[in-house]
Length: 124
Image (cartoon, rainbow, N blue to C red; front, top):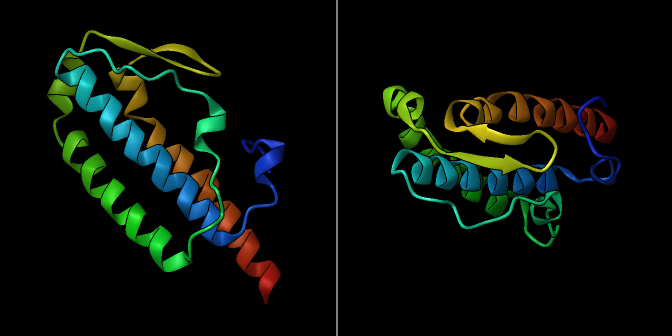
């Protein structure tokens, strides 16, 4: 599938959900820092976003719900996101402002929703 690293092509549905939860949690944290004009003290590496695959789907969904609540809260203040002046480096795309980071959850989630649907279709 376009947009997936080769290492993520063998994920289970629980792993897909776990991965999206980890990413959404950190994007919410990063955006909160940029909006508050603080540095986010993490270097973003794709290795940090690999699911461990040790949790059940129900637990992964719970984590995703928590991450999405935090993400919705910060994304609801579009003015603050657009006004944020700081940037943070993405491992593939380099330094990005808050407004670019705010666009990631939608298309990233769409890629992995397509992946989860393909996994589900294969299970039938």
